[in-house]
Amino acid sequence: MKNVAILGASGFVGQEIIKICLNHPHVRIVALSANKSAGETVQIHDSVGIQTPLKYKSYEDINFSSIDYVFNCLPNENLHKRSDLLKSDVSIIDLSVDFRLDDKNDYENWYGFKHGNFEVNDEFQYGLTEFNRNKIKKCKHIANPGCYATSILIPLIELIKQNAIKTDDIVIDSKSGYSGAGKTKGKKELIKEVNENIRTYGIGDHKHIAEINQELSKIKNIQTEVFFAANILPVERGILSNIYIDTNEVSQNDIYDILQKRFNDEHFIQLLPMNEIPSSREVVGTNNLVIGLKKGYKENKLCIVSVLDNLVKGAAGQAVQNFNLMNDYDERLGLELSLIHISEPTRPERIGDSRVGC
Image 1 (cartoon, rainbow, N blue to C red):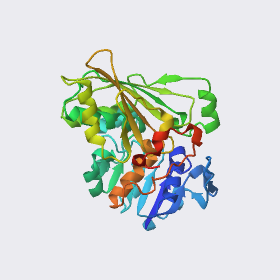
Image 2: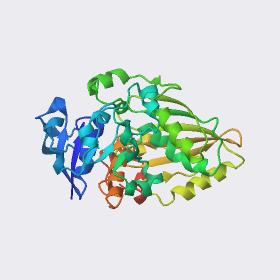
Image 3: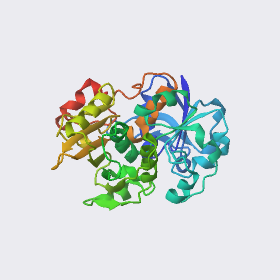
Image 4: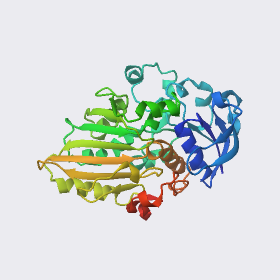
């Protein structure tokens, strides 16, 4: 049994990690930090209606000497300042950006802050689970990938490894539910902002571009830069990424075969039949990522459509997958059940497939 603390536990992602940890046979939650809610009883508000006897604490009131793992769900620019925690024996799974980037200057250039503890940056392994398993098993700390980055990197990495697509003209248009913005404004305020509204932001300068370019450039040691834009939709959760690619002297069917071979044995990744397109509803409340391919009007044109739940596979679920690997547990522990109830008439049938962990 591992003693776990969750920092930033009252936010969207923190609440999701609480739900997963309550469903995990090897996790004991011993501390939940939320400075503004310190002293309040934890209540998980969703259609499942989970309630716990735990109470939020301030960060200063947590005794880290009794804790094995910390899930950091605090906003960006917080963890890198916590020298006491970073120098302790506690293993950290960080869901902020603070230790994702390899170049110290990128934190200032893309996120506008100077890194306070960059000397420990190398102790954090980038936690894209399906591609970094062996390294994750051996590391002390995890830098959990961003939600947009996860939806984009998982479909692209193997194709670039196989030199199957051109890397100089990748265009990505992603859509996310409003929970991706966090709870800074409050849930009611976010709902007002997105109601009957679709908004594009970060065209060509979204912060996740740094992370996406960094990880794609590592594959063949060739600088790769994508053109990326994000959109906020009037739904709570889910990401759908349209990734427009040009093939590199291979057929559209070859692209499909490469992805099928790579993901055939992955529990949480599903590839649909050619020209079948997934929707975000299929993955809500699960740790699944579903990929569809649509042939373009020219033989060398393809659109990859990738969907995931930004709060689960894009954040909390992938974090727990990494926790499981770090402890040599079955990757699926805590993630087998859907965490958000979807009424049966609207749940797509293929989510009942045993491959997707529901």
